[in-house]
Image 1 (tube, helix red, strand yellow):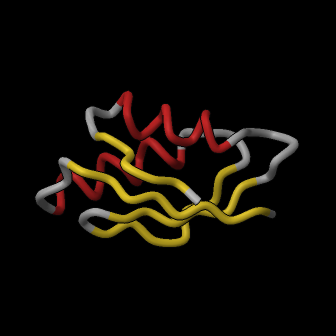
Image 2 (image 1 turned 30 degrees about the vertical axis):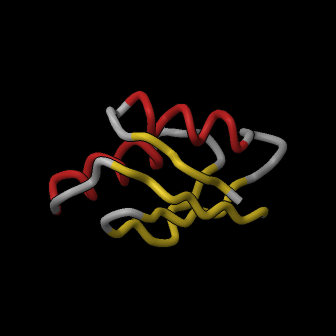
Length: 69
């Protein structure tokens, strides 16, 4: 499993955290480590998904990923 930590703008409350968590859990091969306002950390199977797919899931939820590493 590889790790990915994202800095996310637009998250302001617990509802935002829940939405990002739900979006990340919907990506095949992703295990959510932690989601807090402004940051999300996941472990992912690189044979099942890519950082771009993970970032897209967050952005499709209405947030902006500033950085991902």
